[in-house]
Length: 350
Ligand code: TXA
Ligand code: MG
Image 1 (cartoon, rainbow, N blue to C red):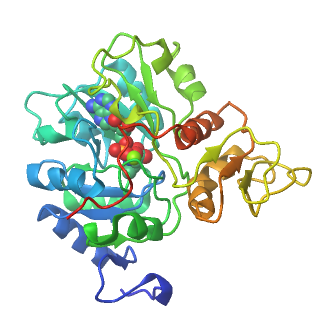
Image 2 (image 1 turned 90 degrees about the vertical axis):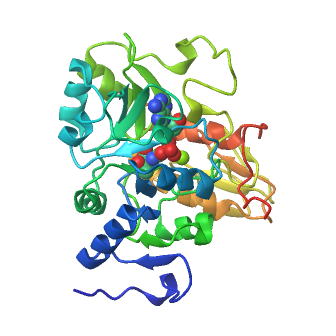
């Protein structure tokens, strides 16, 4: 079976190779993964940079390709809950959430089994593993074809905006990934919710595609957020290492809570914006004020507005409820001052 891919997204002979997710290409991607190579693939949240999670060398090459600090552990993806049970221990809470919300945009941090075949690098020295069963037909077919768990962070350089299209992956990772399974835009557009279930209380490590309200309703308890947690004694080993203040950062400064925009600023609006003045370039996350639409557009629009001619990206307020919590989380990180913990979105010096 062969499919025609529009010429502007295929550059034959040049890495990375973008291919449509045909059965033959999924089989090829699975072969590459089993041989220890990296493959980028779509999930319902964002594109992932995958490696065989049982192969130390392959997992190490993820950290290298992303320029990711080694203390930041990776999410491991499975075709179903049964496969995840071989590497982590589920308690009743985890079972309930997995049975209800998987496949889907929820990642559970659970205690690692001592006999787990996973590379120790995926957990970055922690006794836990973050596990997820994605809900994207291409991700699911790939996981079944590989027959091994796939470690996959978002397919971008560390600290940069996550990719929601195959072109974002190619722009961000260049030739650091050989093959990209290109299946268009990711329907959710924000990363999964990360929930830590290793302690007595469930702790939200990252808001994402599944809302806090949904989790609390299913668990019947409050979910703690990192603000409830005592600060980590060792700044180099945060409990939730991905929660560095500046992350998901575009190159342009980001200004939040904007009511208008200067002539040389870009405006990112939400809901009706005809009353908002200014903006050299204007994009609207969702003219109807729909948070799902806004989430799906967020990263692509931040990238589109991230141009040297803009002095800043001015962003209108987004309601802090439902998916708006995750959207605001990413926007606050995009606006946060760039600390030393953030790596530049550039290749390391040769
Ligand atoms: O939607 C998603 O989750 C995407 C797709 C590809 O599945 N993946 C993703 O991965 O966003 P990444 O690596 O960009 O983010 C993983 C987050 C980080 O914040 C990391 O610190 C946290 O999960 N994490 C992973 N393992 C952990 C662990 N054992 N304990 C605590 N946090 C963990
Ligand atoms: Mg990421």
